[in-house]
Each structure stands twice: as structure tokens, then as C-alpha cells.
Length: 110
Image (tube, rainbow, N blue to C red; front, side, top):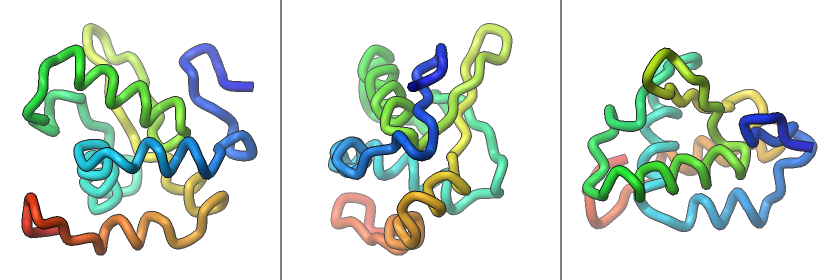
């Protein structure tokens, strides 16, 4: 059962939900950037400079959180997101390596 913030336990992370969350290019960008950074890097949602409204950013991060890809923690008046790297690698080995290696037509880099 997910915790009070909506983070599922590793065993509850479903492949369909993870793939659905990663189907959106902006959400993949967030996961790629977190995966390419230091292991415990915590970033605010605004640090990704996504080209969408604040409400849409909130939706994207909720989708990533509910799929189990990120952990969000309240830090004062903001929320910081951290990649659940160990949980993802345990549940879906190699997935993060595929995402980090992805080159997209839109941004031209991984």
C-alpha cells in the first residue's frame, strides 16, 4: 500500500504504471536528468524548467511519484524530488541505463 504521500512500496511498483509514466517525453526528461545526476540529488520541480504550466508540472510529478519513480519530500514551502534509483534497479534492472542512454529528436541529447 502506498504511503501517505502516495509512494508505492518497491514490490507494488507496476510495470504498466511505470511505462505509462515514462510515455510522456517531459517525464522521461525529468527521470533522465535525475538518473544522470548524483545518487541522492534532490531537486525542486521548478529546477527542471519544464515548458508547461505549474498545474501541469504538478501533474507530471504526481504521476512519477505514484508510479514509484521518484520520492517527493516537503522542504519548507517547496517539494524536492529524488530518483528512487535503488528501488527502480531492484524492480526493473537496466531501465535507468536505457533512459539515460536515450537520445530524443526534440532535445538532441540524453
